[in-house]
Image (spheres, helix red, strand yellow):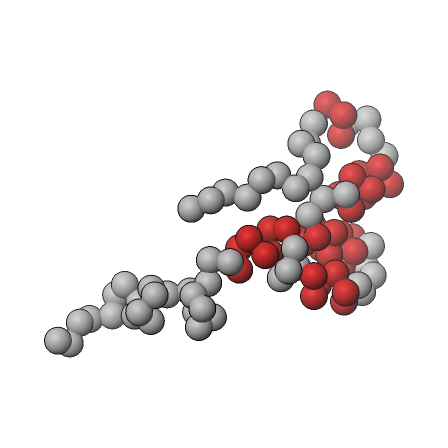
Length: 88
């Protein structure tokens, strides 16, 4: 399985200790679209529906959803779950 490339600056704890809240929020908002959505929703308490819609088409969300089957399911390609008994 391909692991997505990092879509955000690498976190440096030493730098973070010197950052004020606004700088941390700004840093988070420069990250992946899914992180941006969560920052607005959970930290800033702001509704940004456009961001939520973009998660499926950009960044980590797009990469994650690319592993679904064409029928939209996550099971095996033939539609059977690995624990489904074979009745042949």
